[in-house]
Image (cartoon, rainbow, N blue to C red; front, top):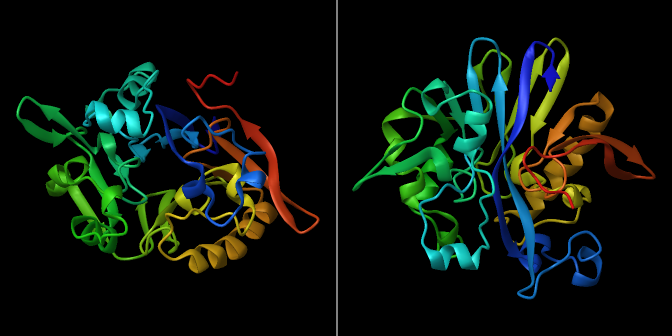
Amino acid sequence: MKLGRFNIQALLDGTFALDGGQMFGVVPKVLWEQKMIADARNRVRLSLTCLLIQTGTHNVIIETGIGDKFDAKFADIYAVQHPTTLVGELKRCGLEPGDIDVVINTHLHFDHCGWNTRRDGGRTLATFPRARYYVQRGEWEHALRPTERDRASYIEEFFAPAEAQTELLEGCAEIVPGVRVEVFPGHTQHLQAVWVESEGQRALFISDLVPTQAHLAYPWIMSFDLYPLETLANKKRLLPRLAQEGAIVVFPHDPTIAWTKLEQKDGKIIPALVSGLSGMNHS
């Protein structure tokens, strides 16, 4: 899709599944199951959506999916399916890992940074050899020393071997012209979303502030969020603005759509225009 002078494309690193109660927090199942159908183990299917931005000068990737550095037990718990992978999707776009200039991680949970690194025999290396990786300093430090509550969300092998190529940010920053990050605490203390702007057109990779379109409703907040009241405040501040401005919103985990514009109707924020995910079976 064209966004001003930029080309942007949603790339799919397959799908995984999480417990529906974890995904919807205080929302009762009788409500959330109207939006997403749970499997026999109460898990809902989620996409692993990454975003490729081609500015004409830089090839930028936002998020790197779940990768392939896990065992059969992990794959079973999270129902990982790889009909497509990030690396395979890049090849479909005519790109190799060495063509990527910038990798932005909104945070370092295992489903957002899996392809930051790859295994090469007995070593784990940066997947994108020329790229600079960008993440908030506070997120990096927390990922190396998580609490008991969120320790399972971080896998050091997924991100730490790329440390030499990683830039640690201190708050909002422009990464390359037209691509900048803004911090929205809630899911984690240092979660960053990514603005993409060209010729007056705007898109926001909203990350886990709003992981799926179902989470546009203000109180629909994941139980994973460390600071849910901050998530709520940021959603109430940001979503009406996105609707008013007509910005495109890119979701990291919606199983049916990659992005949407928003509208405000009867006090609610709802999708206005949607686009299907590349490589996703919508049946």
